[in-house]
Image (cartoon, rainbow, N blue to C red):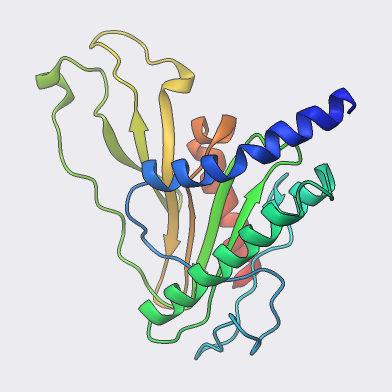
Length: 217
């Protein structure tokens, strides 16, 4: 087996654990959804009340994870790609049900190297702004609270900070993006479970939400 083949096999073998781990640290879902190149009205594709939703074919430099897996190794990645599509589809059904049958879509994305990942979700309907419990970092001797909300334009993000002692400048990689969401009365777009280098750039995650929003409105 070539060095490239061994690397591909290693990456694909770790994807299931990575996906499960991201779900655990990402907190409770704000929304969930469906997509996977499923035609409207097909099995696993909620019909919706106010027009179908389809996940973007690309967001920034990120592509659907199942396609990235197959491009990396079509033979080794087939099972993982099918599992990703199935889980996204099932999540979409749950999201649609939670919103009374509204159109919904979910898609797992990654970069071409399978280093940074996120899950995209959208639903035809409103969602509440994310809530983060209050803490006083000064009382804890910290420079920043462990969790906080941040707004980038019309996008609300939930951020997690690794502890930095008060008076010290936090390292750039000490912040992780838990989720970023944009919502109005007609549509909600969410990016969550962000991993890799992307998670340390909440403004870039918010930009991806805006990019998806512009394509759906």
